[in-house]
Length: 310
Image (cartoon, rainbow, N blue to C red; front, side, top):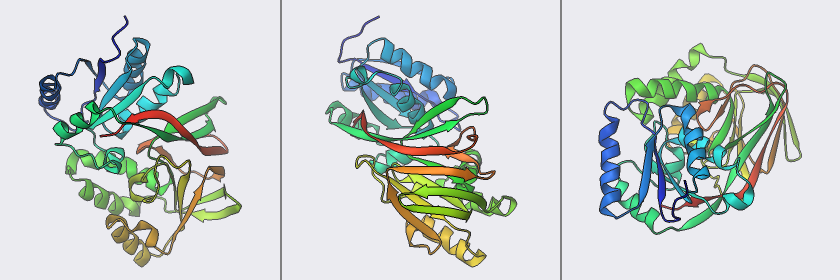
């Protein structure tokens, strides 16, 4: 079924902790109708259904796809877009109305929940910017060569565990800051360092490392200078600090001054080679992924998707 080029395909992804998602959806639809937007809206059942529904929009000819969701939904969206041949992908734009447990990419563009009217007005202006995606290439447990794209970051090691804990604690605490603090408290029950072998630019790192963040954007505060439009990845490698330094690191992290900590070693690159990351969990855009088997590579692909600026 073909649709006209002006019609929006809107994917509503309910927050995992939302009690009354219908009210949120009704508010968004009311604003769209008041602005005279021609649209079709579908709602995802779960994270696994997002990619399928995005593919449905693409296959039915929608040129504007708007995600009402968070970072996980956006990750599924860009991975769906990257399955499409380049010529066809060039015709498609995706936009965002934040509605997730984790909205780091929305915060990068200064988009906040509760500002739906301003955001939709911005989407209607149809200002398009081509943005970069990070890409992790790895081998899975079946021995298959895989790739996965990301908007925010890939975490290797402790912070991948923290992001998973944060996602779980956010359901109970509600507050972004409180969930981070509580997750850090839970560190005492976690493995604090991992034997890693990394290649970044001309440097080879072969030692115990606490965590690595490879950011295409702000990376949940770990790569605060990264931007998704310069063809570069920012990397923060964190060695294991003493307990007093760890407390200082938490403070600097919450203050947005993560790179000022003495145990944080920043890089800017187009490629990170992970030769080994012993028993370290890997997270992508704030969600755990199946841990790669053996070495893997993280690169950046420049200006590959069209993003509607808010």
